[in-house]
Length: 180
Image 1 (tube, rainbow, N blue to C red):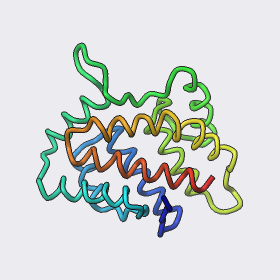
Image 2 (image 1 turned 30 degrees about the vertical axis):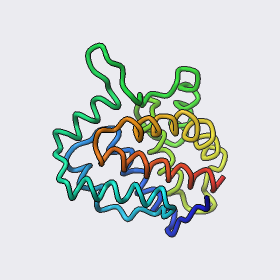
Image 3 (image 1 turned 90 degrees about the vertical axis):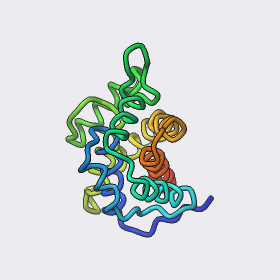
């Protein structure tokens, strides 16, 4: 499958940040901002993700429903583990924590922080890029357990919104893989 990205690293960073915001700490404003993003990935699967977000808006998925889906997907409930835990696996969490500190991203070593770190690395001006950190972040974290988490969201979501977010997140990771 060919990867079509028709925008700048800034546009990719904006999209990555939107995905991180929704999976990390959703709220009505985060959901609304999804519809304002000019999604920079245009492969067929990512276009399906854009269509899922449009369907979420057209069907007027209520914030309460989206927050319940977020709870079930990422946090779990009494006696139920989350469908797609955001935390980095114990084996790689210290490595991710070191990468986050290197990029000055705060928070626990989880998928939202890894995505925010990738967005920060994309925003660095040419010549100041940290290729080693970007490579490690993408290959050791985002394309392994990060992709597994987003795949679980894509398969387990009960809302069009989270299906679309996961699909677009995976499209952005395909872009990351193609850039390395």
